[in-house]
Image 1 (cartoon, rainbow, N blue to C red):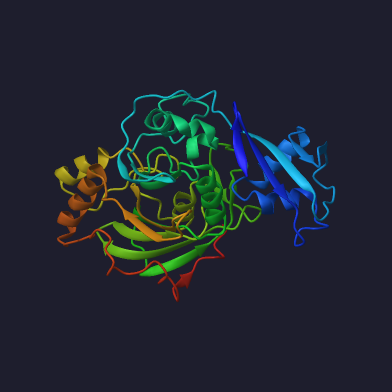
Image 2 (image 1 turned 90 degrees about the horizontal axis):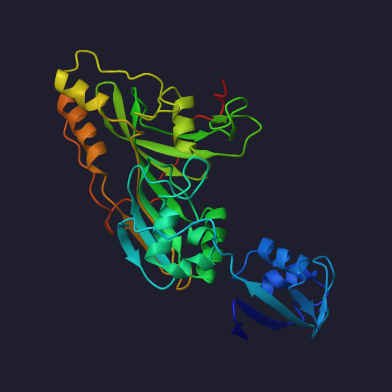
Length: 349
């Protein structure tokens, strides 16, 4: 049972036999699953949690029949103001919002990007999102990476989406145009961490976090390859770092890509198109998840953006090949088909 009290919400529950003897923080996580354990622990330390009318520590044990009260407060985004930035909405309901993010849009404010972000746009689109951490953003795309993203619109959806992403239950498929000729497919299993000397970059590092990327070739061009990429983990710059480590960087990548390499004998028209593309050619094409409230499997897809498609079309014309990348439909190949390919887990040079 809960009810609103001005700017906070009172949550109440009673400890049942299954939680008798558990730590308070464990009982809170079980009884109020819409909130993260870290938030519940913070409220406990702040005196916002009472057991039978008395404050307790997170590690204190609870007993059968104990009455728990939590004075929950919203995490207001005071440093982020609503701004009328257009959003490409693919789907929305009371609990989630699915977007097609354009190139050039930073996901949330940070050093060098205090406003003009997706978070500012979300707060304008739905002012109620101020009650959620980062206006409901549960995963990121780099500034110049395009494609499909999901955003939470309710507290329950936020918690469950964060948990699903952590459990690798949200499936993400990308299109990446990389430099050079790649094999038919593979799995890259290389840990990623912060670059040891350049703090704005990531790098393959044996001390980093486990990072797994699956890829399959969709089309070979002269000097470039179009890939279908699936993320098993979701590290910062993961695809860009993994491909650069294999010496096949994402085309146009200003951080990991190195100098521009043109196909031998490229026409002036092709050179102009390739030189004019000033970002990484990386697009989040498909997203599959279980709806955080209904549990229904949902799949979303968005087309490769015009600037990236122009580059691919020019490379295809140069190589005299025809390529086709159909939109997702129920008969299309499922996500879980990346197995039996070459492993790239030992190339840590």
